[in-house]
Length: 553
Image 1 (tube, helix red, strand yellow):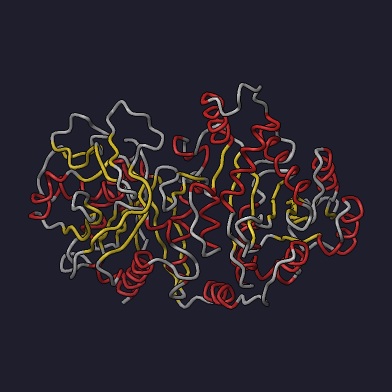
Image 2 (image 1 turned 90 degrees about the vertical axis):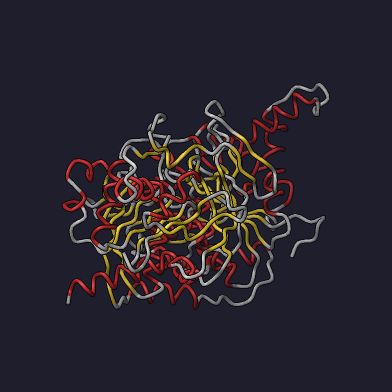
């Protein structure tokens, strides 16, 4: 453990050649091994875009917006981090160029720089270093991923900041790990090392010499290529790590450990660590590799062409399967296809359906039809956020007889606005937040961890096994309390509410009417991990198994 006056040892992760090499997964896998060696590990992401956070970015652009306990809207890589390590992260762990410049400009306007000229060096780089220290303080080791690819103009301030940190603190307090691509040219039957050589050359041109290379390739790196890369990049041969394409990301910690990647880090940073106990990860891999059952789950969403938009949902469903040795095959369906072709046709042959979150009216009617079909046919239904709102609209229209029921997000003049805009809510810290139609979009939702009271005797209570649970939120519209009694009278069960009783958190159909129909306003996928799963997802997959078994009789 570091003392208050000392600096946490840091490992910086950069990427080269091409994007999407899996820096986040590689960094998280290394963190998992270090944690398995008894070290307290934290992680953070430095993103080079000018947005303050990804909260206002399109899912097609950025993929999923991940939310932490404190309500920070962050990069999806923080989801990878939390699924691989037990440390709960916060807004401190997700830094963008926008956040950095916002802080620097605020200081300049206040006069903190005493009239000096504000420049990238030292003011911007100092702010970056301050953010890194704030996020990693008190841990045994911090792993910091720099977004983008070496050579991008946008990431230069981050790279300069970490170069300074290495110079200031020395190699035993700051080390560099660089991910590159070693492509296989099928026509020549060869792995090509030149892209890696050039990538490291680019990195060295800005003053950073990597200590470790992670080489992505389709097949294990032969000794000849490993030695060649080591010679050309000035990296020790043992520190040239082969990262092949594996069929299960949870195999990566064991794969890296077999090449002694964790020992290289432990040795260079002088960390006091035990032997690695990877038994939990071995158990996860074993359960995924040797399933006893299989189910097909339909995910009816709006951004299915870009599955990163639902990254945590997809992972949480698989975790639910791992906890009961069940292979989960995901069938990604566009909500608009349900509108065009009908739910019966689109959902034929699936064992359960999940409707995830989203914004805007496109595809909403398809989600409502999906809820109606699942409710009427006994198909296990799991609605999350917008998926709950669709279920509420379905119940209002088709059970309560409220013709024209809708969300005001889609129809501001709805005859029965069963879902409406949040105007006032209490944050986790106890502060009152208010907004209206004219408010900025960024950061004006109900965000972060919020406790809710679960009603005894409900499906939700049976799944959680608790009276009070905490889940993370990210929504702008929610249940209109004026319709509680009408919808309950129509058969809908309100199974969880916020502690102040103002927010309907979960709804379900009685199990006498439907075997498993449940929807929640929060995002439980953000708290699911491969080692423990999440009770709602575990329960949903179990219901899908039971549905499949009953259909086979």
